[in-house]
Image (cartoon, rainbow, N blue to C red):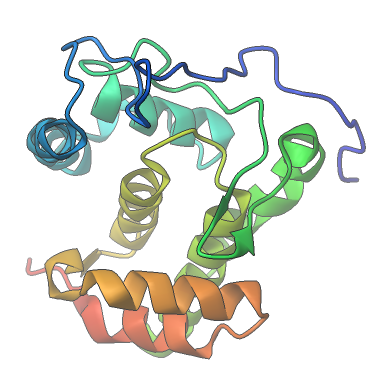
Length: 206
């Protein structure tokens, strides 16, 4: 039975910005948005590799706790609120994400998509891609963090694929593809994101 509570998570945050900017206050005290993006890219690239290669760094279950742990590992050198959910509503490019008050309400439903992936037995590549795409799509609409949702989601999905000895080549995806497939998911169309996952999904060499 799905949770029906309608309240914020206890650790929810609304990060502050530096005065007269749209830059989150950060642990490096970087006020330039472009330089902050470069810092984010540097830190997250290193931690992403570690998280993919060492599963012991994260909780075993594919749930919100794991997603928050991924986010915390990626961003704890930049933001004091790394790993914490947002307390305010968000939208991007005209697409509304799950309202903050509804994040607890839909938690079980969202992560049931990961359970759908894990329920597969020796799946063919196409079926695995379809299930991974469904999971990624709902995670993106859920969008629980103030920043860094995309990176966090991609690691979560990559770890799911690894359960079946598959890898995902995210380097082959252009930024506009992420935006376009996300928009289509918000419209209820999962075909583009499924095709994208199918294209970058490949068998891990043994």
